Image 1: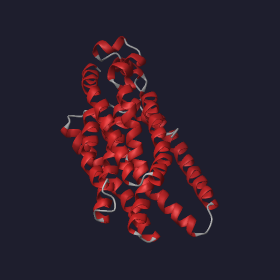
Image 2 (image 1 turned 120 degrees about the vertical axis):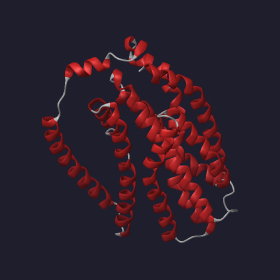
Image 3 (image 1 turned 45 degrees about the vertical axis):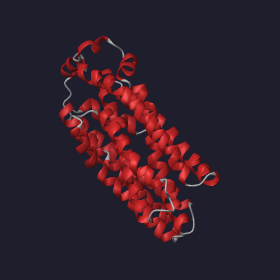
Length: 300
C-alpha cells in the first residue's frame, strides 16, 4: 500500500505521456501475478500445518525485491537523462489550470466524486474474491479442494484486466471516468444474476463472479492508476493515488467484515443487493464527474 503511490509518481514524472499510459497498463499486471503467487504461497504453507512459514516466506520475498530494487535504481539513475529545463517548460503548459494549485485542481477535476467509486470497486473486487468461493462452496456443498480451485480461477481471470481495460479505454477516447462508469454499468446484469444464488447453476455464478471482479479491477486501472497519474503536472500523482487508495482500503475493510455479517444474518443474496445499491450510487457519482473530468483533461 505504501509502495504503489510513489511508484505512480515515479512513472508519471519520468515517462512522457505517450509511454506513460502503456507502462502503467503493463505494470498493473503485477497485481494479478502477485495475487496468484499469494494464493500459491498460502496454500503451500497451510498444507504444512502452520501459518508461521508465511511470514518467513514473505520476509524473504521482500528482501530479494529490496536488493533488486536497489541495484536497478542505481543503474537506471546513471542512465536516466533528466532535462530540468524541459520538465519545467512542460509543467507550464495546460491552459488556465497553470496558475491553480493542486487542491483546486482536485476540486475542479471531480476527483473527490471518485472517492465513493474507489471504495465500492474494492468492496466488489476483494469482497467477492474473499467470500465468493465460500458462498459457492456452502451453497452447493462442494469440497474444500474444489472451492479452492474456483478461487484460483477467479484470480487467474484477473490477467485479462489490462487488455480488456485498454479496449474500453480506447473506445472512450482515453477517458478514465467514462471507462469506470461503463464498467460499473456492465456490473448490473451479473450482480442481478448473483442475487439468485442457490437457484442458478454454480458454474454460471462463477462466471458472473469473474465478470464482476474483472470489471471492478478495470475501475482500479482507470481511476486509481491512469486517472491519478494525470495530476503529475502539479506534482500530485502520488497524493491523488493516496486519496483513492485510502478509500479503497476502507472498502476492503467493509467488504471483509461487512459481507460476512450480511451473509450470516440475512443470507448471501443480500450481499449482492447491497452491492447493487453501491454500484448505482457510484455510477451517479461518476456521471456527475464526467463533464468535470472532460474539462480537466482538455485544460491540462
